[in-house]
Image: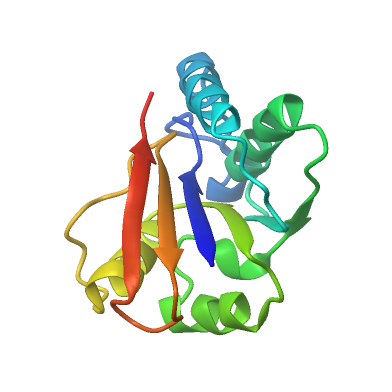
Length: 152
């Protein structure tokens, strides 16, 4: 299984609520750069999930501009404070070979640590507009291997 972790682009610092924060112009540009690099690798995504928060939805919309055949489903468990194990149970139960997740920190950083290092102690933070590709022959803590990282 290939799991792609894409953190939303840079967002405005303040808004009516955290859920309503939107991407900045720089966040849009940086995400576009990463999505172009990602599309050049010709991913064959079976499932694409995004957080219900505005900045993640805007990031997913930028992905679909470049990969128009892709359809995102809203996944409530992609919010910043979701428990990693809860999300992992959902991923593991999917009948998919390639899964793209668009979400937030601390969740994505903790998920990356769980998949690759077997612990939720973050050793490599997932930056804004950053994408990690993780290969997992067996879905268990620490069994993932980072194939590549894309950055703006």
